[in-house]
Length: 205
Image (cartoon, rainbow, N blue to C red; front, side):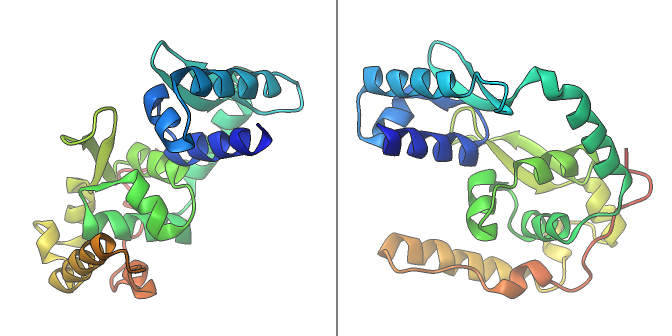
């Protein structure tokens, strides 16, 4: 039980958006009843005042969220974050979206090795990236650079970015290697492309 609860927590944290009970059951190797039981147990453990997270659920999906009681401090944090220059992590994420978008958050997280939910939300609020529904995955989204970002960088389209074809080729090789089961990650310099974007003054909150 403890291991399954930990696995559930990791799934909800990484996914970041509502996750179907059916998918939870499949990933954790249980049935629908087992998945709902794990979610119910995990929700009980989050009720205490010493926990900052909570669970929001519907008939078929569940999501890990912050508790409403912390909305004021989180709002202050977000406002402060938006008033500052882009952090190295934000620039890294923006570069990945710029060169490989449309790209899912799951793939961004995989390449960065960390959860990118907050950074993507910040980039969305700044108007630097755009989000659109994933046509192949219900309740999932794809991220692309915004027109404002492309305009700020002085290019008319994504393919005009420096070495765009080179990095797209690397992505295709990466995706092909995934199908063979061989380990592969994009090179570290993917996130360190030339002419890294900085925050446009007219898009900050």
